[in-house]
Structures are given as C-alpha cells and as structure tokens.
Amino acid sequence: MHNQLIEAWWSMLRKHNAQYWMNVFQMLKEDNLFDGSFLDKSLIQFCSTPLIQKELDQVCLEWNVHRIRKTRNANAPAGRPAIMYEMPSLHGVSDHIT
Image (cartoon, rainbow, N blue to C red; front, side, top):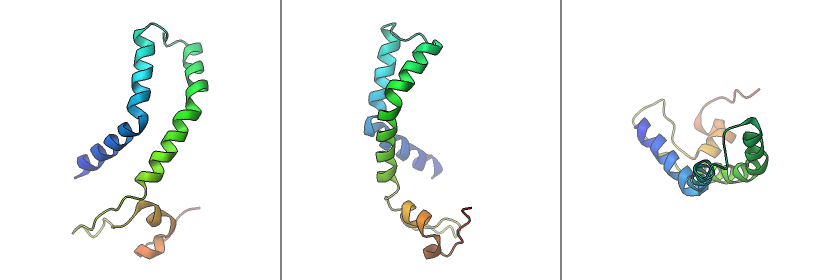
C-alpha cells in the first residue's frame, strides 16, 4: 500500500511540470551548457527556483485536497490531508504544533 501512495505522488508530481524541468536540465547537460560548476549551479538555482517553487506550491494545493479513504487500520485516519492538518480535533487527535 505504501508503494502505491508514493507512486501516485510521483505520478502527480511528474504530470505537473516536474518532468518538463527534468527534461530541460537534462538537455542543458547533454548540450554541454551545464558542467556542474558552482557558477552553473548558482545560475540554474537563481533563474529557475522561483518558477519551480510556484509550480510545487500548486501541486501541494491539489495533492492536499485529495481524499484518503477509510481503512481497517485504526491508526490510519481518513479524510482530506489539508483539513486533517488544519483541524486535527475533527479527527479526534490533539494539535501538537508549537
């Protein structure tokens, strides 16, 4: 079951432009436009990090509203991750955020 959840997460992440960025960086490397030097890494981070972060934030918003179905396992709560995180009392647990 754990493998299925991880695979579902990776599938969703790749569909939301992660595969695009992986391809872009691979092309830069194959075309000898990226050699892994400190300057190359810094330029890639400076130019692409804000764009990638914006896309990751969108993926998290979509992922955290999916429904986790009920199981027989008493330790595995069901519901939507965003609601479970924001309102733990609805699921009979305590909020331990400090």
